[in-house]
Amino acid sequence: MKKFLLTLTAFVAVLSASAESLFPGGWEASYEPVSAAEELKGIHTAVAEDGSVFVSGTYNKAFTFAGKNVADPEGLTSASIVKYNEKGEEQWIVTMEGNAIVSAIDVDADGTLYAAGYFMDAVKYEGAEGISAELSGSADAYAAFVAKISKDGKFETVKVIASTANEEIVNSFMYFPMAGDVYVKPSNIQIDGDKVYVAANYAGDVAELSWKGAYINVFDVMYMDNRNVGVFSLNKSDLSGAANVATVQNTEIVSYVDYYAKAFDFVVDNGTVYVGFIGVGNMTLATSAEKKDFIFAKTDEGSLEHAFVLAAIGETVATKVYNVAMSDKLYTPYNLFMGEEGENLIIGGTFSGELPFDTQKTSGELASDVFMASVKKADGAVNWTYVSGKESVATYTVTATNVVIATGSDVTFLDRATGEVLKTDAVVTLAADGCATARAAVATAETKVVVSGELIAEETPDQVVDPDLIEIPQDQGKQYDTFARAELVEGEEYNTYTVTENLQIAFKMMDVDVKDCDYVVVKFAEPVAAGWKLAFWSNQDLVDVPEGATEFKYVFADDPKCGVTNGVLPQICMMTFFGGFTAPLEAKVVGIYKHVAGVADAIEDVEVAAPVSGKFIENGQVVIIKNGKKYNMAGVAIQ
Image (cartoon, rainbow, N blue to C red):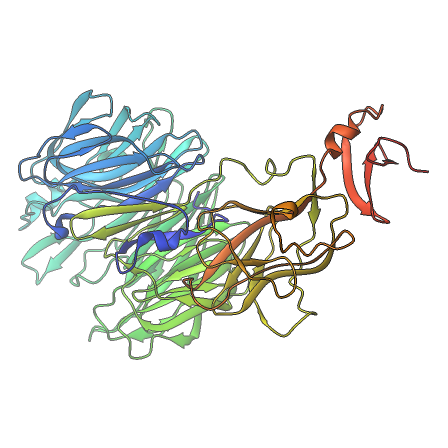
């Protein structure tokens, strides 16, 4: 299922800026698998729960990765998948030597990788352990493959799904498919329950899935294959049990090459498959149980309605059509991306003419504009829509903590619940076949693949607080001055502060009671970028928070300027000053704590079975609560 993860989302990108800028304090690595930049294709990412990053791509020369020498494929465009661990260290590489492309990857909870792609002729695939085998296909048609690869880089099994030319068409009229005209090309792969789901474009007949082709009548002289799309499922354990989920096609023989699903994607959640497509002409959605026909407006002069169809496929099939006015634009670069979270689907991509989810919004004179929409799973009702108003051929739109819209020139962050624009960041330009995943970014720099990722802290927020620390509630302190404040997003595990200019304050607490304490510490969920300053009393020289720090400890006894008087620290303030940072500057603050030396040891002498359940300052003294009773640091009960 394509969930919208509560982490920063990044993109396959043209390297217009350092990829590390997306993950301040994170890691960056690269490898060089091709001799020319245009040979870098099939780049996709997946991130495991432990932070490991998988990257697919092509190679056409000899190179080395994780100590393994990869041989020159001798002029063939071959496919590879590499793995980095959570620290960005090279782990392994697997290869598919031959005419092969990886077009989608996904990783299971246990670290097993599932890859889908297509190939022609024969392909030798080799796992990280050096064991190789061969896929056999047609020299004239592209077949799909789905590979199951262990977390250690072993090919556990590979499934091939092939298409063939329709003999009835061949024998009845002029039909001369050329190499590549017949194909099955996967575009998306997702894991749900005990199944693997794969979306694919196809032409010809796919017998194993009972998929029939569609054809174009060329001036009553000859036939050509028309494009079709579909979703099929496999058993996750061994990739057996190939079964149709749904196909979308123009089932009549037509004379126009434009009559096919202009864009297509799906998302699956707990066995329900949500399919979305842009339809033109007469379209048919066919599942294993039923068929649904759709007729969209068209004229003999070539004007077409480009409507959006949403289908929920489970034990039954429910559909909703979002109609639009006809357009005379014969070529429209439609793209589509779907995801789900909770009760809603997030649908994004590019469009032309009227927006299907809100016909009051249009692309205007633009050939293609970017959109995002939130709709309810239950009935397809629209929650909100967004249109960028900028020319774009972006392939993917993605979401994170806030919805993220990826355009051809910038990235716009939207509020996930309302669609309100939060900010725009012109850091990343998407590559032609760009894709997105959480906690990792892949960029192309000439012939290099540049990979960056979040550096996952060794300690989680739940582990970071020791027994001698008392939390100081985070407060932006807007009541103290008129300086601008950071944008604050509160979370269960940490608060996220984002600043965009000089003299912006993240948090500010004044006159903090630190009686019996020896230091205060600020702890971060992720390594911070350069530019943050800390102050601990009025008019203090600001202290730099080191780049990459996961905590900053201020020890009273080590600072000759220490302003603690009568157990009171004048302030704890984190802010930007003038320069020294790259906006937007973000910090994920787990907590701010004061350390009470010996409180954990003192409590061990209290003969109460229950563990410490709370510590706080009361009347200038440390008070410990155990089993509902109050004790002082000496373990004496307080009446």
